Structures are given as C-alpha cells and as structure tokens.
Length: 212
Image (cartoon, rainbow, N blue to C red; front, side, top):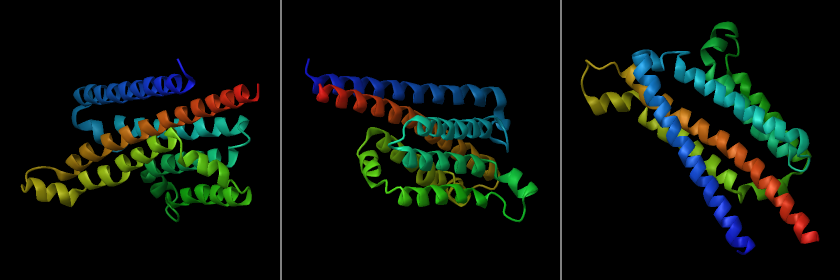
C-alpha cells in the first residue's frame, strides 16, 4: 500500500467517523425534543446550553493546541478567539441584562486582537496551509450551516409568510428551525478542531520520514 493510498484511506475513515458523529447529534436532538417538548428551544434551554458548551469546547480545543504548536500559534489563537466570541454571543441575553452599555458586542475585541497578532507575527504561510487543509473545508461548510442556512430558514418573517396562518407561534417555530441547525454547525467546527490537530500531527510525521 503506497503512502498516498494509505493517507487517502485514513482521511476517508475520519470523514466517515465525523459523519457518524453528526448523525448521532441529530438523534440526540430528536431525543431531547421528545423529552423537553416546547422547552427544548426556550432561552437558556437544553439546546442553547449545548451550543454554549460546544463553543466553549471549540475555544478550549484551539487554545490548548496553541500552547504547544508554536508554528501555528497565531492562527490557533485566532480560531480560539472566534470560539470565544461565539460563546459570548450565545449568552447575549445575560450580557444585555448585566452589561447593558456594551451588551455582547465586546466579544469582537478578541478576534480583532487575534487578527492584529496574525499581522504582527506575519503568519501568512500558516494561513495558506490552513486554507488548503481539510479542517478549513469543514469549518467553511459549518459556517455555511450556521449563518446563511440557519438564519434564512429560521427567519421569522420567512416562516410567517411560508405558513401564512396567525395561529402558529412563529417565535417558537423560528427557534425550532434555527437553533438545532446552529448546533450542528458548532458540532462540525469542534470536529474540525480535532481534524486540525490530526493533520498537524500527521504532517509532522511526514516531515520526519522525508528527513530520514
């Protein structure tokens, strides 16, 4: 078995595992909906709590990788800052109550600082490598899920026009559509963080083998 075939096989197996995990998350959503009914999508309900946990895990995963991956540290800190910003954004109601002057908008300070750090450290090479990686592709598709798909399908006026009946609570319906889709997107980003780590480890092994 050639190295290329072996690499392709391993990559395919990981993709299948990621797909299985995403399907298991869908099954979990079904179970939670059955258990909590309409409370499933209320503010700070099960699904919003799960979203916050995933955002925390995303930020933690990239931050821990940044500790020992010096070469790609600026990039990893940027990705961790996005996870932190998403976590703060998911807690928008809490910040609107306790920090009314700035609300949750201060979260953009962290990505902005990380971008400045990327420029100062001149991390162009690591960014180019990342843009060609499988982990970037996973994150890109996850962002498509989170932003245009979830926001469009979960838009209240869109649902109201689609259903065309005043008897349906479009607020609950909006959250019912939007929140689970966002959760799936966050789950995929978390998996992409693991893929980032795996790709880094494998690229290090390939370099060592080439030097022998």
